[in-house]
Length: 212
Ligand code: BG6
Ligand code: MG
Image (cartoon, rainbow, N blue to C red; front, side, top):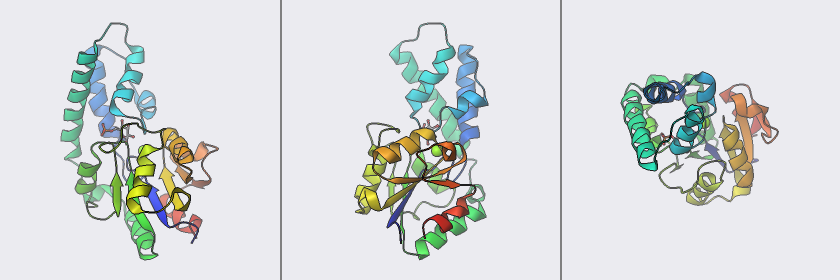
């Protein structure tokens, strides 16, 4: 086998939470009178909550204190968390579920490497709470993607060296983080367009072909 472990980004790879992020950020943007659309929302993939807010604030003319920023970001997260309660195992596609099971049966160690501090909730909602061998997320890192920390923590928890890990990502920040961690990366969606994605996945199950 080319790799011993596969580290998956969560949002945009295993399941789709963009529309929930969008709705929650849209509420905050409307409150501030800032223009916000799906194109801007797409720029928030893979980066932390506060970094996302800073991007939204590029369209804001006024002055906003750090304390207010913290309050808006906390409010966004409360709205987002309520929306996540609508998620269920139906939000995990058959294709993703079957591919993950096949990879596990083939002996790969499987982990999550996500910037989100809500990763545990999302995994629980979609029925994957106990599926992965390790979960590295926004709660155990001090720097978000494109910093490699989240993937290095996953490789450490799995006890598999970076060169034996493959990362699966949908965000450019995540592809850069994988490269910085010294890991090969399979890109899906937008990330497949990055030169740093060694493998370009048209669909999730293509993974079964590239890891052989
Ligand atoms: C990433 C998302 O998975 O998590 C980003 O792609 C998001 O858009 C980041 O900003 C942080 O998420 P959370 O759940 O901690 O606010
Ligand atoms: Mg993602």
